[in-house]
Image (cartoon, rainbow, N blue to C red; front, top):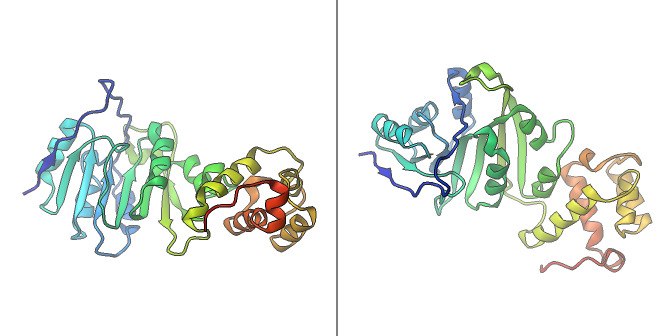
Length: 274
């Protein structure tokens, strides 16, 4: 029997949901196709009226559908099969399963940044299939250039852009198109978790630091000019390249310069615990 777990509504009273429901079956089918073929349980954030929930349930895996709107949650609990648990709650406060799982979310556009930030800090999930605004999907997948948020989490997560989703696929129709963004937790991270804070601080300093092109920015951060030149040659970084132009391997290699003995001395960066 499907059950609806109560959850305390968000503080502050009325909540503006701002969700555009998927009504295009081809897009729904593609979302389900992107879910990996594993026995892991599934979590769907912002389940709405179940357009994606019901097809996910047909995969035969345990599904937890999280929806903040009381009427939608009650309706959903009446139409889903027994392998689905409907939880009424805020996706920004939802407690995920303790074991490994996969996540699906048609992200309410006004919650895109907080949802992504929370997702990156949550343990457990292995793949996230997200419907987000088109430009956000492009930026997070580093299409046309990376953002700081993408660069800061690249060593641990691999993003890719699957396709564009037209505004006509939603009701009510939004003013912009969306995109299907797939995030995979790397089975072999490019950096140890213990270096995460130092690396992210380094990425932020490079993105916001002064200089005419990346090599100049890195030297101004205190790195050895010769080391930077060798790094630039190895990774084909032009003198006028910007932080947005780097890929994940180049970011990790640049950070590695700060962890050399010479880099530690020149940059004065704290050595992370190994």
